[in-house]
Length: 245
Image (cartoon, rainbow, N blue to C red):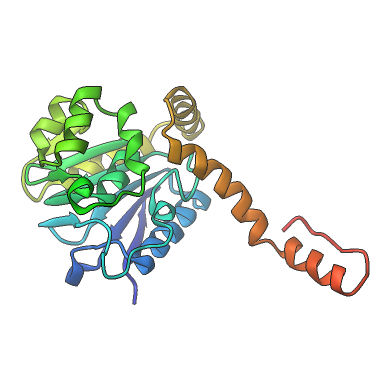
């Protein structure tokens, strides 16, 4: 079953979460498909991506407690897959927990007036830690209130503090995000990518971002053909034939 749709038009990728029966709860399958979508975007001719939901009332309810994702960070743009191209989150309805981290790590956000952000992990008793990067994306005391009190934040409040770029009338957030994406896609790609990379380097990193940088490097080694060849060559008592793959 396809839980993530990837559509491309005029160098803009629209990546849509579509697990409507569970309000886009982030389970292992959805996180895996999101990672695949980010890899496809990275390797494609698309210049900007818009992350959206197939339903209006829920962007995502966060981690699926019945199928907790082993590596939720794989689904997060810039963490699971390193990206030099910009990502715009187009949100509506509830944006909960881990889904907030998806939006937090996007470069821009266009929010429907119906959007409600909430990070309730303190009330549930668990956290994956990725939300710590919010400290570079919200004023300190507002971020601490959001994390520790665990109450919802409206789209308008998020706009006031600079977490959201634009607030759209109900039902128009995706069109407005795609309009913004088209403007970016029309700019010089090398400059856009350079500006994103420079901005990323200038922004303070949360602990999980640093860990993700190392994990991406080591996961490439762990999943490589060279590792399989090295083990096989050792067991066969011969010199390995490495290919760099």
